[in-house]
Amino acid sequence: MRDVRDTIARPSLDTYYQVNFSFGNFDKWLAEVDDADGPNSKKRTQARGFKQKMSLLCTQAEIPGTSFVESTVVGHHQGIQESFPQLRNYPPLNLVFYVDADHVVLEVLETWMSYINPIQTRQRNINAYSRFNYPDNYKEIIHLAKFERDTFIDDRSKGDYSTRVTNYEFVNVWPSNLTSMRLAYGDSNVLKCNIQFLYDRFFTSFHKVENGERPVNTLVGVVNSKDQQGFPIFKDTNGKDVKPDFSGQTINPKYQIGDGAGFI
Image (cartoon, rainbow, N blue to C red; front, side, top):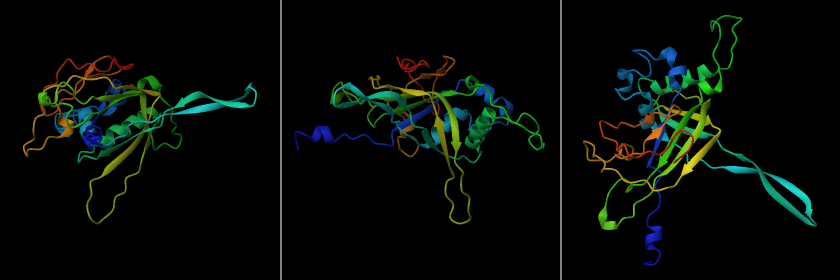
């Protein structure tokens, strides 16, 4: 047991993650409802902005997998059948959100999907028709970071080693399927929204990220894994820094992880 204890005693936990919505085109597809009472208003987002509110309400995420479409070749070598990769497939990204009482998450997703395929005339007209917008105007970038309980804790008693942060950058993301949500009388439950995103590809970074300051405990003495200081800073499609702002906590500006086209 002493020989294998250090190897098997540190499993990865699925509750420590962060989804960051590095949207750079939302000023286009959210323009019609982005006003004083829109989904990005301070009142409805509690002065956090809709991207940070969606990040905090994202209750389930997925580490993506991938697969190859292979082609079979016969005859290059006598009596041997060979397989070669021909195309790489990327599965959809499925996210689950808690729906807030202001319905910000629902309005953002519905507005996004309506912009992709808008009705060109009055919706109730019998001769109404739709036309798709250009992909460059609605495709976005989403970042997913998987860390562990001790990633942002500077414990010198353990030496210089610290758990790494694994980062995923999804390129050209767009919502493809918003699942229906069941409403019913009876016991009350938190309403959840399931959304499926398609994307062109993703990039992965397993390199070591320096730790930031220690996390700040909440009022009840619980450290929320999504409220860590020193969380990596990403860039959106326009090259602007995307800095999650968690309850006034400071973010160390030296964590530059993504540049919108992959990790550096």
